[in-house]
Length: 362
Image 1 (cartoon, helix red, strand yellow):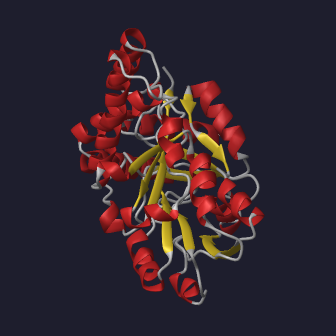
Image 2 (tube, rainbow, N blue to C red):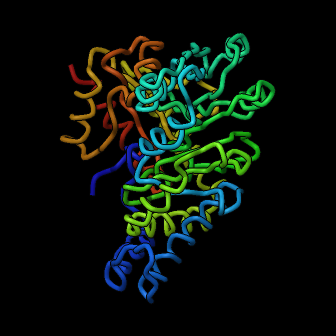
């Protein structure tokens, strides 16, 4: 088994309960939900969708009726958020957010939407004073966690400003849900979406979406959601089991475990020669810790770690050239460690000693 430290790309291994749920579904049911049919098999698939929706609602402290499923995040950006914006509307993103370079930007700019990119501050948060100077903003799109630095952004403070301006705030929770407690009401966001193959341990092919009930009548394509999710019951089964695991373990406990791993990892990397840790010290960080090794390309270090030591980490820009430019690491990017609940202290210590061995070589 490799030492897998790339959990913000996709978690590995999937927890045993998810493996069992997927295997059991394939063995005992294995059908999709078919429109207009009602039999013992389709009733089971319908219950699986309800289980996943109810679990996510509990995890986010919202009502199950406000949770939807889609094939992926790009679908949500296109069919839901993209359709919400019309020609002449203004949308704001942060220049240091991967959303500034995402499918969402391509979709909305093609529809004549005015896109304003606001620079980041020293903690890679959107500069609220600059946001205040942008008038008539219909929508603000932002990630809960920065994909390069791992910094958790002050979404509730940003959302409070958006509420004053009657701006809809959309938040990508993909790198945070399952790895820390999240209360949608406390965050203050109007729309939240997330992939489910990261810290929710899903098998992929399913994304989740929350929409504030007061906004539902403004979206034209919500009827598509159940249609597409019904095609991937296997993915939904994995999400339901993954969410149950997260709830049983307690998101607060998961956050504290990951935070402890991050503290140990930061300590061991600080002792390595020629290593620069990207995340600013004392910041409200998440499961992501990125670093660089002087005079070595990130992909070279990542390859050496896997080939020589059996350690899997991420490398590159992770769709966020804006953040990489801000830290003067464009276009090579960073080495990114994605810590998961199943990782151990020995995992991160082993990474530290392996990096030290590489950096000690002439």
